Length: 487
Image (tube, rainbow, N blue to C red):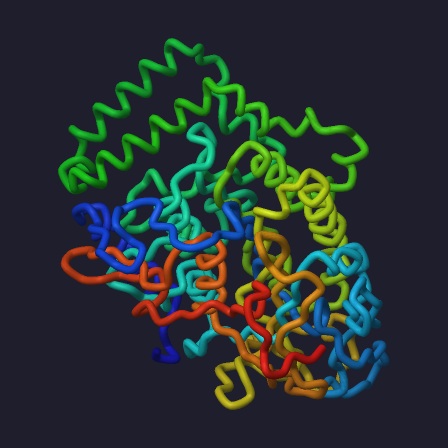
């Protein structure tokens, strides 16, 4: 990938792929091991049937969160290269395993899940958040000539809805109207699978109920008439001329599903005011925290795949280009209580046994290294070698060679640590490195989706992971003992 590849190139390429997907015919399921039909191609014993992705958008620094290193408090005139963690570490529920200060609640539930400390993000040249997020969510490096489906769309397509009324794929918390909205749209899609498998978008969980109601001032009869008119327009408009019959029918089915939800009792799950105040207050740390609460309620009602994000907006949230330490204090307050409570609530009701929770980010951060040690890329942050200002104290550069991922439930091994990063800079993965195709295939394996699942699209095979070569990390599922796993 060329170093000069930029956002404009990304939008142009992915937009072309999306338009091609609309014109493409029906994807054809191949006859593979355990795969005899286009849906519910499930094999073996499954350990999960629901997935919740907690997306730490913007690049969550591993040394500041779930893989703390030597703590060095701020001193004016200090050398930046000395700073590995800007927070002291605190013990977790696992003996000998510490998290960074501010994540004590999540640490208290780690006996219920697994910690990966050796995720390695792709080397794609000049680092753009939207490109790495595209790669994480689809398992394919952009640009692609085919509109690659989001992992949630694959799961919605292959497994179908658990509850026919509840959308199988729901995305909570990401607005597509600001920042790099056009780039984010490129992977918030079902691609060639069709609109019925695309995410049901809820930008603000506190307004989730509004997403499943007719617009204010519109009665049910008028809304039904408008829905019918919309379906007619799909067939007769320029979109209808451009789209294939398969894609048009998929779009119609997505609208029919949304209409069915409007009139169902399950719509009450979107109403957070029904939650007991003492529980609501734990989750109420902002839109992300309330998104976790909505995810729990939708899981209980039969959602298949739910993504909750801290939201990617350039230079906000975990996208810490400066003031890294002080920004991390606020981000930890946002995620710590809600994530831990989500695990506890689902465990208490028995849903955690069949619900896999994943907490991840597109890459990590470091103070001094941009990219990875053996493949450094153009620096995007002015980070001085000597720190005289608190705003430079923190992890501000993009680091791809050592990231942390948490996994709970759905067959994930409990109280388990996989992989290791170096204790000194560069804090790169040194044991059991994990790539994105392994993460995806671990999820698919737990759901019973075979590794060689593919569709033929425009006479070409397209797999859930590139060329179908991804392999699950069986140790995370308790199916195999690794040769060496150290904390």
